[in-house]
Length: 159
Image (tube, rainbow, N blue to C red; front, side):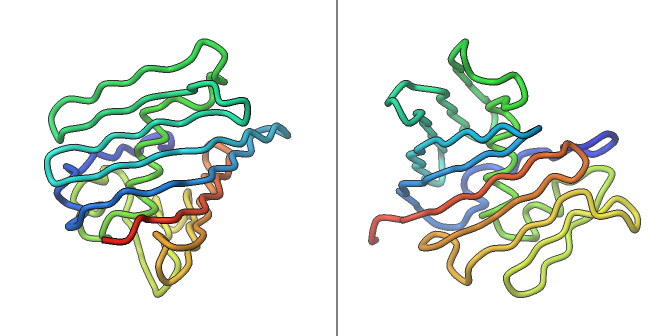
């Protein structure tokens, strides 16, 4: 996440709900913008994410069962966009604050209303803004330490 900061991924069950969502992800890094469409499926025993680019090519696949993380990445995917970090960003955006706090090492998370802040001491390393229901709206994560931003527009299937 940042120098000296790690996130031990909470299990999918820590989300405390099932989700099937379509997501439009815009990533910005060093003047480059990449757009992906994601399909995210979360159940108590597993998380599955597939991202494709605007041409329909599979960019990455991520499977996480709380113990084992399996990733596949396309050779053309920018090195600055490792699937493991994408999963960590999804957790920061959507998982309950307390489950994130338990897994953070070297930082803390503060949440107020529709914003979250990951801080290393007094320095904000990640800032998050999100709609009241991020599963049916927008969320933005800015990683100040790694100098990138992702915007996620989500639409969860009705339960």
